[in-house]
Length: 94
Image (cartoon, rainbow, N blue to C red; front, side):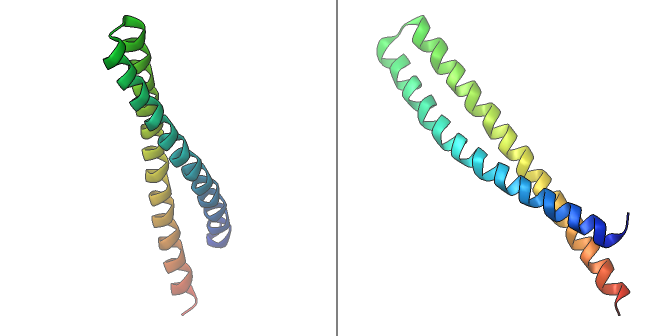
């Protein structure tokens, strides 16, 4: 694949991942509130059901945070690759 073709593909993937990261940020913010509310309910009610709901809410939050982290890592790798390709393209133009 030519450098310019790879750059176009990377740019499209970066845009897609940026959208995904923004959505995950919103989901993490929402789930953080859900998990905190569930934690407080579990403390107040002291029932097995409330404890389970709090644990599940926290696990959901952890999954979202992992997904967000993986998405950000992928974005950084793609941006690094994009920078390297741009440098190669610039070097060819000299």
